[in-house]
Length: 448
Image (cartoon, rainbow, N blue to C red; front, top):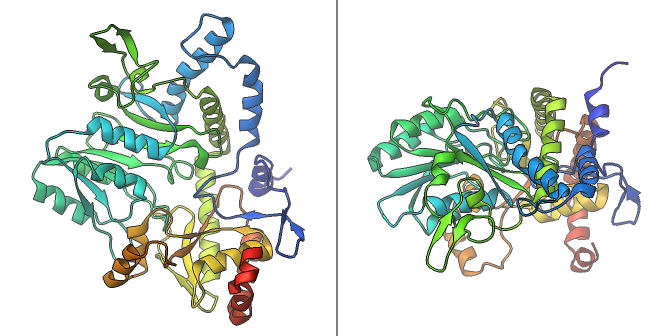
């Protein structure tokens, strides 16, 4: 039988055929174009959870047979995660956290120094989870982006040179959750290391879509730290990963203290455990780890290169079709698609972003996201919002604010789904006033 990527892959995902109601109460098969926020789970993930559940027990806290089984799975999982990212198991360690946000906060706490000269270089395109954790602990500066919103390595080196050794860390997104631009993380690492700075990659939007390697830890272009979340790679149950040098986490005290972090405690003394246990306070999330491993195995069986090719095909097709629609405004480079994951930010002229996203959901069961995607400064930059307007929003934070509609594809989405979206957008564009009257009417909006 001829191999069909789309048909076979869709069979691996939970819930794609679960009907949802439209505003007219008709039930339809939904279309999920909001994968950048959360992906649906693999069937294999839920099967693995069910298979493991009878063996579920305490980790590192019991001598019973089930406890030993659970502890072995948990401990051995780290090598599988490291292998997935080509990370040297003798140099790096895996610390399990709740999600990417938790991972970045943990690293910011562990890096914290009262030396106020230390600088963290973030970028002007970051999710606020890779911005806010640094602000109260370090001097923070931001690497600029170009007119398309792409990271400027030239500005990065300029700032590193200006701070003359005071930059402790450069922290950048592997891929933007707004525009989908993939940053040249190894080139950035090479530049950072030349100025004796470490580099952290926020891999949440990158790892499910492209092959990522930590690199040789003794080469100048290796990645020091990376953080990512399982819920964006088809595995629920709330697990995140922080990878970094074992030696780094062996030093210093953990940011969370309690059970599982110590070797011995007296009334006067605490001797903390070695990494990674020292940084995993409390009962570990073994279910999350089981889910993550199942997702990694499924991604490997599909082939990351196959996923990348399929999603790039969707990206190009969708952008070409969107460019044909009158009044569609795209907030990204529509020509160079090589350094992208499949995310498209756009608006329909003279229609509020939240109204358009509601119409797509209520009329066709299409899920997108609208707003600023937890990347407010970046979206403000892309929309060219004047400073005086930003000051007004600061004064009235509950007021309606500008934003963008975002499409984000997963490995299971299809050309046919894109065609449904495009046809509806054409209809909305041609009948804008009618849709605006219906969906901006207060009573209708409340009903929806």
